[in-house]
Image 1 (cartoon, rainbow, N blue to C red):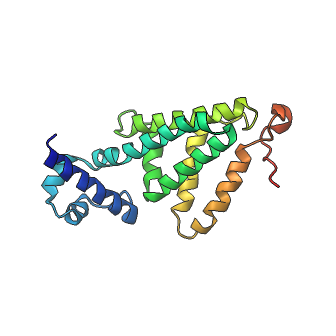
Image 2: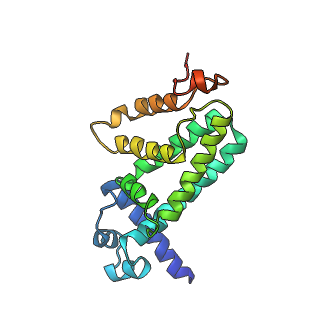
Image 3: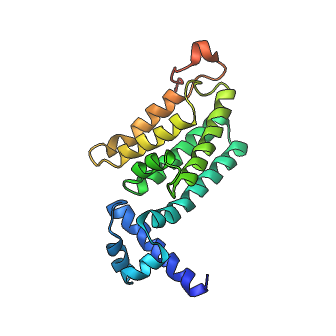
Amino acid sequence: MRADARKNRDHLLAVAGTAIAEQGVDVSLRDIARRADVGLATLLRHFPTREALLEVLLRTRFDELTAKAAELETSSSPEDALVSWLRDCVAWATEYRGVTVLMAAAIGDTESALHASCVTLRAGGARLLTRAQAAGMARSDIDGADLFALVAALAWLGDQPPLAPRADHLFDVVASAILTSAGSGDAEGEGRPRSRS
């Protein structure tokens, strides 16, 4: 891709990111083109469909979150890594209004342009969860699919203006429910919130 074409594409992505953050994933492509000061045909030449635009825009962030999961695996305790990654995912998903609906649909649709990125993101979280479970620090009756669903649910809360003030508190409640007392064993500790003093 020529340098000027890449510059135009990057500009369109930046404008689209701002528009989606403000208006949600259903913002019109015509509005994005107008904000970017280009014709709709120019936008469609780079991104022929809304999903194509979203796939490129979101894939970069998915890849960053997947890389963060790999980094946390080696740099943090199992408990801290899991909660940190979960918090980052929820914060990111809340940035783009409506993205949780797309993520939930894409994870089960192999034809979706977002499917591969969602699967990779879910796998990164699943590894952190499995590591915490192996250390006896996370309940053993949930898996990566459950964790991915919790990201979507917590992000949805932050996306609802009347509920947004409760989002941080509810994140802590959910994180506490995922974690168990270290070394408590499945019979005693499974599902019991970790004590916080």
